[in-house]
Length: 206
Image 1 (cartoon, one colour):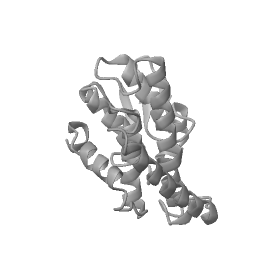
Image 2 (cartoon, one colour; image 1 turned 45 degrees about the horizontal axis):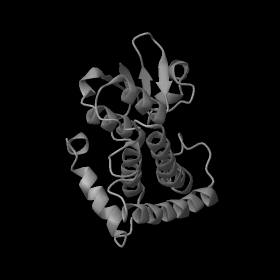
Image 3 (cartoon, one colour; image 1 turned 30 degrees about the vertical axis):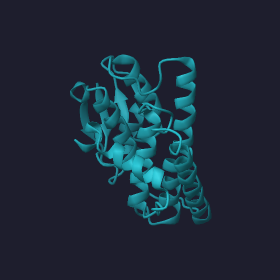
Image 4 (cartoon, helix red, strand yellow; image 1 turned 45 degrees about the vertical axis):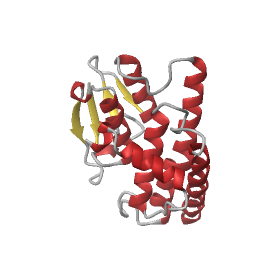
């Protein structure tokens, strides 16, 4: 497998964590994409991924899979490590639901704030901005953090008793929040404790 990404960005981090959780990081060859230089928007890259986003997975047959959730589903189904997406219909549905909430309400909401209400990645890359939308999404992120804190009052992880793709997404969302200077209230003690616990996993701590 080849993975086109940029190390340190939140979505590429999700895939790297998933690979590490499955113990198969060495199964992938990583190729750095110059996002700051606009490489992801070139015709050559968009031939691989018309979304013009990273990460993008290239399989041995030359086909490509984009979007983090799809890539993680592929990793989960291909390798024998502990499942990140669930093993029963109910578990898969619950993890998918919680992952969607963490993605839309936290990771993507913080992303919208960063790209629309701050200087983001700079004027050359941020070709359209709507500050009102970005600031509204900052409020969504705060609401989602409080919601997840409540979930974690009753569960060990975001989607129940086992670490899953929903935890990866939420963890990446909080890391992005740090970068974008979106406050993570210290009063959310369950969320803070969960974050500290997840940060100690070998797939993240290294």
